[in-house]
Image 1 (tube, rainbow, N blue to C red):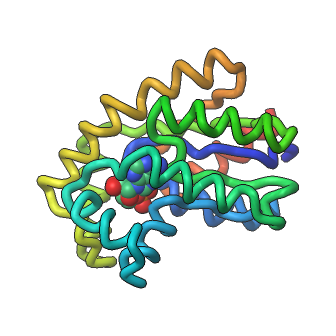
Image 2 (cartoon, rainbow, N blue to C red):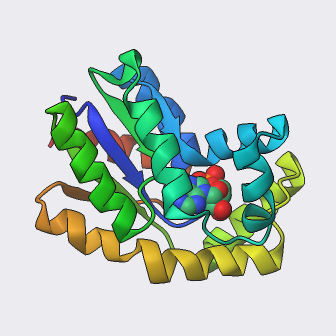
Length: 190
Ligand code: AMP
């Protein structure tokens, strides 16, 4: 697998985090999850965390300014020089455009935007199960619906954007973790 600068795209509950863990092991690149970074900021009660908590709990998107700042800082670190797996970023066109600007400033190009596709009912079921296991405050039925709406309205347009850039690869996210992992391997090798 040659891709080393990658975006993992998909609706909440598509299994991005799970598949990211396998990918970073195989590719030896850092996992850059804005959701993880924001949750860490919430737990540490930093100014960003204090601002983001209510928005995240409601299932809405944190403002572009804040998230772009966090992502740019992380991608500028040394360990991201030879590659990274972006998980949960970009989620809006403004974020995608900021990422383009940052990558061109760094003199590198995106290799792949891997989009995991799922059906919505299955996603809600997955998220409710995860809510039980992880106790995430943003995993109740109402916020799940809001997160899906945010995805459809603001993030789904990125599929066309990355198709236009010639880097979109779609993978069916239904099935077992192993099955999806195998499809991803094949998609990246093909
Ligand atoms: P995730 O773990 O990626 O599902 O992210 C959890 C929550 O963090 C999301 O529902 C948003 O409230 C917030 N978040 C994470 N990444 C972003 C982003 N790129 N833009 C806006 N909000 C984000």
